[in-house]
Every structure is written in structure tokens, then in C-alpha cells.
Length: 314
Ligand SMILES: Cc1cc2nc3c(=O)[nH]c(=O)nc-3n(C[C@H](O)[C@H](O)[C@H](O)COP(=O)(O)O)c2cc1C
Image (cartoon, rainbow, N blue to C red; front, side, top):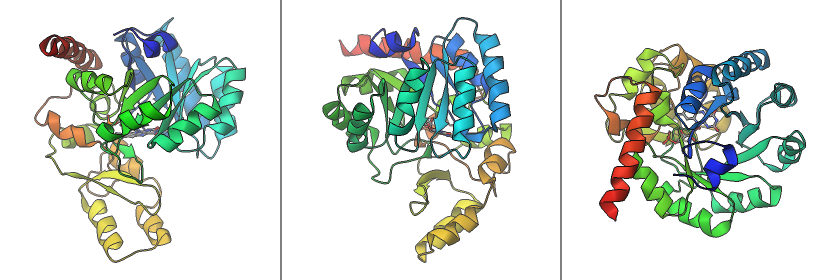
């Protein structure tokens, strides 16, 4: 599987575990890096001091193996966060939710490689202007916050491939070895997987959240909240309240009030599956009835299926 992405990050498999709020602590990041991929710590749900602790523990657990940090660029304490990342000697940062122009140069000056997440080919071209090292193109199947255009991974990857020559990582709906072969056929070189790793034993999400996600049917998640920040949500009491408000034309302010603060923590981390904001990707339903597996089991299955699929297609 060696290619520009595995070479850029010094990893065996070009498989990245996306940074995920309330899921991607040092345990998940280190487990993915130890299994031959690239683990990312998700800074989006961490206070700066907590982030520093996770980086220190991840360094201890990983030894010489690379790992990175995902930083959503709308983070309120972004200067502090970036300084911690540089001070702790992190070598890879995946930025998302903002313009890559502001931080890429600074991160490069500190010897840090930068990948940036986009949901359209227009933004992918802007990544090239900003000088990032790789681009993550994320289709609307993905868990978490999402593109307004609702472009699916199958449509997005070839469009981004046309728009830029940057090393390209596909994300959104990728959870199996066969899906990696499919996006490679479309021009991607690596993959960023969120949902499947969020549901492993090493993820810091609550057991109630993982069990619910491993029991979803097709159509049980929907992209809502386009007026504030499009988010793929699982159907529960909160999601129905949001949907009802959107149907009657609620303003952005009203939607912000309904979502409130701390609802993703309540749902994903604390396990209140009725009232919390539950973010997961469409692909969860493919794993209905599965146990909560370890990262190593998931990686092994993905790699085996990747090679089996390639052989089948020759
Ligand atoms: C629970 C959850 C939280 C997420 N949080 C973030 C985040 O903090 N920053 C980010 O860039 N992406 C976030 N994502 C997106 C993932 O990093 C990844 O790109 C996406 O999940 C890939 O699609 P998939 O879910 O179909 O695998 C999140 C995804 C999930 C499921």
C-alpha cells in the first residue's frame, strides 16, 4: 500500500484515524499508529492542558512511531493549542473547519507537516495555494461536521483529483478494505476513517454510544443544522427537536439555542443517547450487530480485505 501518503507521514498503511471529538484521545491515536496507520488526537473537545496530557501520553505509547493532532480552526484558544503542539514536538497536524492559509506557514516553520480537510474541489484548490502537504477530501456520508453542498465521496474524490496535484486522502463512508480500493481507483492515495474507529474499544466514546451506533439501520443518520454548521446526527429526541425546528424555518439563533453547549459531550462521551448530540457516519449501519472490536482487529480486517479485493479485481 506504499505511496505518497505513507511516505509523507512515515507509516506502513496510508490509513488515518480522523480526529474526532470525544473519541480520539491518546489511546485511540496510539493504537492506530501501532497498527501501522496514522493516529490523530482530536483537539476539538480538549482544553489546552488536556491536549498536552494526551500528546505526552501518546508520545510515550508510540515511541518512534508517528502520530498527529487534528485541530478544528474555529477552536477558541487556537494560539495556545498550536504553541503546545509545537512545544511538544508533534510532527503532523490535520487542520479542519476553516481556512488553511492562516496556520500552514507557521506550522511549516515549526517543522510540522500539514494536511487540511475540505468538502469541495474549490476548497481543495485553495489548499494548494496555502501550501499544505496533503488534502483530505471528505464526502457527505461522513460522521461529524460536513459540507453544505452534500457532495458524496464518490463524486468528490474525482473532482478534487482534477482540481489539485496534492497527495489526496479520501474520507466519508470508508470503513472497509474494499472501500479503500474504490477510492484509490478514483484517484485518492490514502484514506481517513472516522466512524469505524470511533466504535472501537480504544475510542473514548461511551459504551452506550458505541452500542447504539453498532445497531443502526440505513437512514438512521441525517445531515441537519445547515444554517449553523451542517452536522450528521443520529435520530433521537434532540435530532427530532432540531428537525422540527428546521421544518418550521427556525432561525440560526434558535437552532443554536436548541443545540446548546456540551451536547456532543453529553451524547458521545457521557452516553445520554436521547438528549445528546450524536455524531456518526452513514457507514455505521454496515456494522450492525458487530461487537465493539479492538483497533488491531479492525486494521487487520481492513488490510486483509484490501488485498483480497485487489486480487479479485485483477
Ligand atoms: C464522532 C465524530 C466526531 C468527529 N469530530 C471531528 C473533529 O473534531 N474534527 C474533524 O476534523 N473531523 C471530525 N470528524 C470527522 C472525522 O475526522 C472523519 O473525517 C470522518 O468521520 C470520516 O468519515 P466516516 O465517519 O464516514 O469514516 C468526526 C467524526 C465523528 C464520527
